[in-house]
Length: 184
Image 1 (cartoon, rainbow, N blue to C red):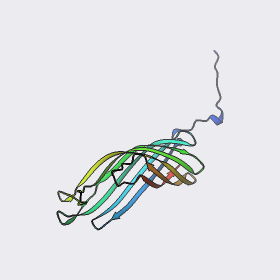
Image 2: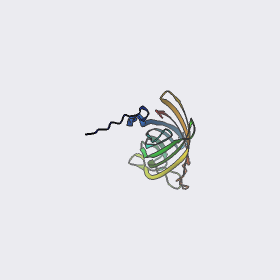
Image 3: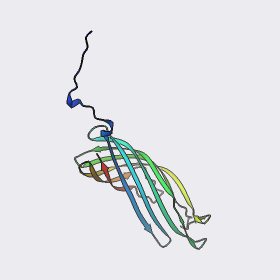
Image 4: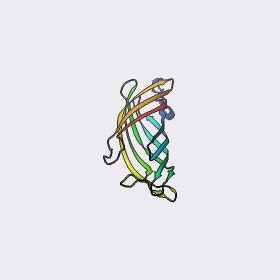
């Protein structure tokens, strides 16, 4: 009986799956206001990337937003508030173009909740609260980012453009993200 044994070359060492993962995320914070309403929002956007090779990675990304709206409801002559939660989920791909520059593409489905207004801009009430509506829509983002790292930790900033931007909304098609990453 002949048996063959193949010795593994140290350079062919298999990388554990967990070593091929990187983690990142953003913290979203913002506010705006006018004489009729105020908005404050806070969100978290974690992501996990799988390194297909040294330069290319893919993975899931989720986003959850808490928003506090306070607005003057003219029909009731008082201020009312609402506290909706909005979220999105999707997939992304990243390719490192240079040492610190990457290309980013992402598709995600978003469920956004916002206050309802009539054609004159007046807000509505719903049982003593600010009335809200919900929309589901898709986003396809492409853009570039810059990252800087120290050991396995790093920071990043990216500028993305939404190719599926709806001309009928006031939303801007440009997104700027600032975040951190680990093992990118």
